[in-house]
Each structure stands twice: as structure tokens, then as C-alpha cells.
Length: 278
View 1 (spheres, rainbow, N blue to C red):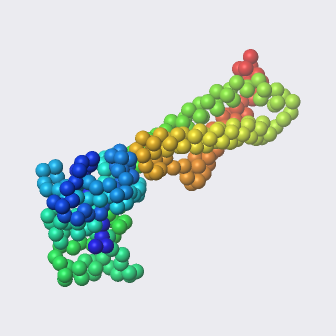
View 2 (cartoon, rainbow, N blue to C red):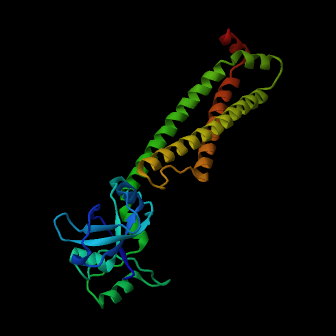
């Protein structure tokens, strides 16, 4: 049959199989991770059963495959075996019964119409778009994403306050320099622009360093967890949009904090600034 199903089964290998007392071996496809753990190869003969106490059948490893990375099942660390749907139904003792199948509808076909036509042949079909099923199975990840977003907002607000305080302290240390510039006849506007330019350079430098650290951290996270779970799933993804938003936010906060600190400094008369510095 053209459909395939995924079944978690109990397998036992490494014994002599009396072929005259058994039915023909059914072909199965074994997950690569399982094949490596059990030292299985294409052509090996196994016993496969749906439960530890039920009857078993002979099965031959016809293929070894790499499953598509799925974040919803990666933490379970289960081993999987794929069988033809007819063989699986016979093994479970439940012919003509499936939990879920995938179909492709022509463009413009309503899922409810497809379900109605299917139910004319057999009762009990429900048709859901793949997007709906994905949304239902990703509820946990949506909650985690919202939690991370809340943490990010709090972190940004806290870092903005810290950055403003830091810029105010750094500018306060420049009181004598600002006073000298004002005594020499340099205008308040020029001093303000110079301080803002300095803050901009610092913000740009910090952004470059931050992007480098984020890239290194993302690569380290992927390397560690892909090795730990033996998967190609991407655990940390640094997109261009994320980098652009982070750089823009960093530069904006840096310039804003520098401008506020510079504006506060140039409003003070040079004589007072010199007296405070002394």
C-alpha cells in the first residue's frame, strides 16, 4: 500500500530463525539512530511485535532512513520503525483503521467538502489544514516564545536604564574637558555634537562585538545540542532580521543615552563645570 505509518516496536535480534515455521518476512525501514544503537544493517532479519506479550512476525530491514527533524518529539528520544500500512494493520490486529493520513487537495477545494466526500465512503473522517495541526502541536513553543519575549522586554528596559546611568557617569568625568572647550570659544552645539558622535562610535563598536558574540554563542548551542540529540534540528537561529533589530536598538539606545547626557552637560555654565570638576 502507498501509505506508511510510524510504529514504536520491540525488536530482538541475534538468534537463529527457523524459516520453515515462519511467515515471509515483512519489509521495514529503521531509523538511522536506532540502526546505529542496535548495530542493524540492511538485510538483517528481526522479530517485530506490537507489544512485549503479543505474537511476533519476522521482519527484514529493507532501508535505513533519517527522520525529518521535529522539535515536538526530539525530547522523547524514541526509536522509530516504518512499515507498510497493510503490514502494520495486520501486526496490530486492526485492519482498515488509521489515525491520521496526509492528502493533497487541489487549490480552492474546501477541507469540509473533502471530509464530506470521504465520509460517503467511510464514516469518521475529519479534514484539517496542515497549518491548523501545526498550530495545535506548537502550543508549548508559542508559550515559551511569549515567555522569552517578556524576558527580552524586561532585559531591554533594564539595559537602557543601565546604559543611561553609565553614559551620565562617563560624561560627568569629562566636565573639565567640556569646560576647557567652552572657555576656548567652542559653541555649546559643537560640544554637544562631539559628545553624541563619541556615543555613536561606542554604540557601533558595541554592536559589532555583540553580533560576534551572538554568532559564536548560537554556533556553540547548535553544535552542542545537535550532537547531544543526534539531529540536524536548528536550536538557535540568528536571522538577518534579528541582527538588524538588535543593531538598530543598540545604536538607538546608545545615541539616545549619549545625547541626553551631553544635553545635560552643555546646559551647565563652563565656570560651574570647572568648579565641580575641581
